[in-house]
Length: 363
Image 1 (cartoon, rainbow, N blue to C red):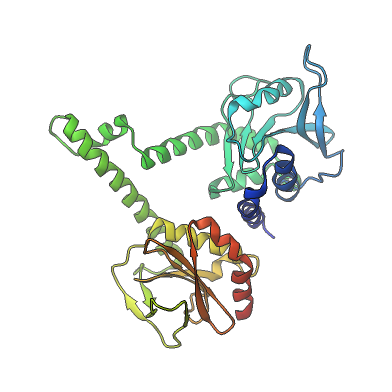
Image 2 (tube, one colour):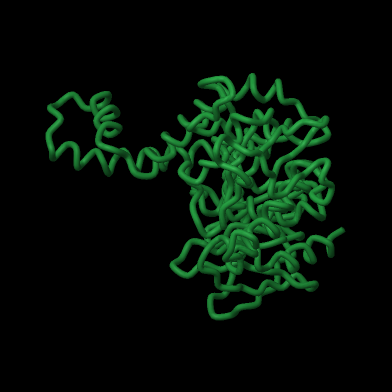
């Protein structure tokens, strides 16, 4: 399994189990130890590689422990401090990391709750851990651009010099991306004014501010949607995207046969970000059975289809998201669809076995 696939598999596990993880020890056992072993590649049961409850006396403080120290080439290289998954990761939780960072040879410190991993180094001052992370990995929303940098910390290709040299750029790019994401989600007054004054020549009054706050929010969402569609168009090599096939689905039944004939092409469809996210989740689930490139998508008026080999006779799932109550369509061996109501995208992971079984039936 490739590095990115392992990361997706761990992310799926976190989503499935987070509801029953209530303590710090449970977080370590269920999430953090698999991250150290599966993602970073270190043997958590070998004290020459991973030291739990690592002790290094700091000044007058004796016997303090940090959750894990990762050893490479006989030296402590990475320190890890854990909090329970039900708590957000905050820099206030990193007091022990700050102290230990100064008295060990470690250049990398990780603060995590098992779902979000914040990576720190000493860019601002030598042997002093920075107050802000240079890399943030959120297993609930993995930034694909960070995967090559994260892989440099794995045992097989450990490249500390390379990641330290790239840390400065990663730190500021990450902060800029998070700032932009926050503005896109809920634009602040300064952001609204910045954009408004570039398209509106009149005085920036309270009424104008209120009007453009809504317009900026709509424009940014549409811009993101356009960018997603453009990237998918290029990935699929289909200049006419979005083009799709449509089947008639009676609304009064929960099980319908897949049409054997080619379905009608539908134009002027708008693929939503939620549908794209659902598609990515389904693809991540079934990539254990087939290469991700074989999992395709097609939008339609009444559903969003996930297909194997871009073949409408090989449906993996259908996402019925164009309504108040959302459904995921699951297929059996006879290619009959059963719609299951879901309240959030995370519930797609509850159907992992069924989705994988459908793919296996086509192989």
